[in-house]
Image (cartoon, rainbow, N blue to C red):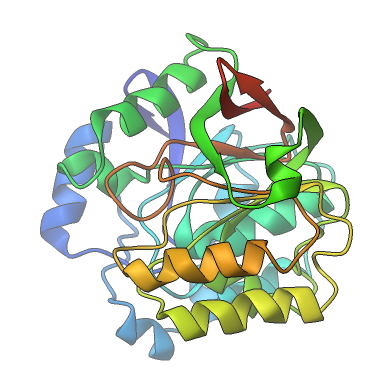
Length: 290
């Protein structure tokens, strides 16, 4: 067990690792050394034994700690998931998995299979530098400490007419990294989107590739009964915003856009398996998650 900012947590690292210098700084944050450091890069994850990574993660899933906080994202969780789905976690106390990017698959699976609440937000590595805003970091800490009772994203911009004409949209929340979600299609951890408010973000994706992935979700039937889609940040490629607007105008789903979550500096947390409400607040759309 580790104590981060007065919160008891376990550190999970089922994706890419960090070098020993980063680990040392993370250990200073939590006040305790980690004897199971994952130091392998994303490229090295190709050759790592996934069973070894699963064994470490599985031990933490069965621990008494309520919060499992990811070190970082990167690559690797898809190779661990086939071991995860063979286990029965129905009798253990529900936990909160915090992370984003590659962690999306793990969060979606546990929220759907075991009704866990997960949070897409800053990982422990993000607290070491200025790559994420202080607001992004403080919001998730304040929520976990009970200083705020809900998560909220502001400045949602409607991308199509059905979104502009919407008054209140309610539904369970789900989503995360678009590439990670696409890689889960056809697996036992495939995302369920029926009657959900779907959050999507990504980074380093060209416009035509973004269009291809979004159409894959549509053609796979994953957008048939979605209550609404909220696009987060998709990197600095200006072409991507044109793609998102074009996609929004081709589909009969309320679609909104915000830069308040994603891989860039602003990454405010959103809940997975929370009760979500999209509504107008002073002529601007917001989403509240409780």
